[in-house]
Image: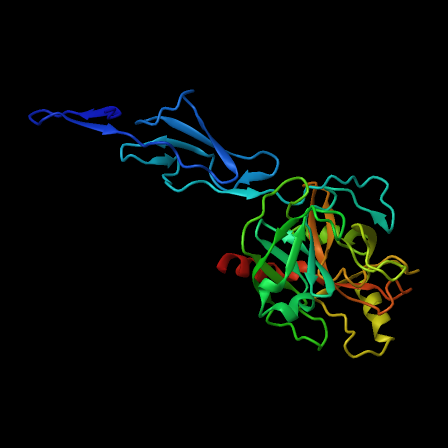
Length: 344
């Protein structure tokens, strides 16, 4: 029987004690692989291995991935950790170019909005955005009726056609509605998270959107361009068959609030937890069926897309002039999002 490589420690006046150390084959790394640095599958004392995450779609969350077989028989990192490294999904990559961006009504191509999620809620349709590989960000009002029966949500990803049979199917484990949201009493705190029963495989057509970082506000000022996508109602009044997107500018907050105050609707109050987007002439807007979808922005420094807003509410007449689309301002909810994702 192969007892592995010996490690001997001899001292004067004592017996020579030899240790035979065998760490065994290293564990497989989810969404990654392992390489033997010696070139052969040596698993004995002082042998070294290198864990690597699947390129393009995953990145190592901590450490350099190098482990050594130590005297205690465990593969151990340079920081003394015996647990495996973690491969986290890369976020915010898109096949879409932003050169010559124009407003509205364009058909998306596969990989343009890989974070796009379709939520089928009985006879209605809503949207969401993938966060990590087992969480979805959406609007509270879109999933409020399903909060006690999360498994009733039909969740689809990775397809352009709304009714395509070729999609990745996912099911909800739980729905988390922001505690400050009051259904049928306005749209403040209109944000929710859906935890999936299983992690989805990340690829070029299914990839999470990034959360906004500290510099996000600098890319979301008045007249900066965001993009919203979905299968919502078109100008003909029917749900879109193919995923569409529209580029829309951010609207000054006071201008937007004043536009809704003129409508004299007590529920149509634009709060500091909201941002507005659209064009003054109308015609470019998110609409019914888009609820919960992401309003995304390109970070010109990291070249990654992040979610700045969630489709929340607006005029009953989509694209109405001087009545803009209103979105939940995601950057106000980063602590809440991280608390839910870390605790459940």
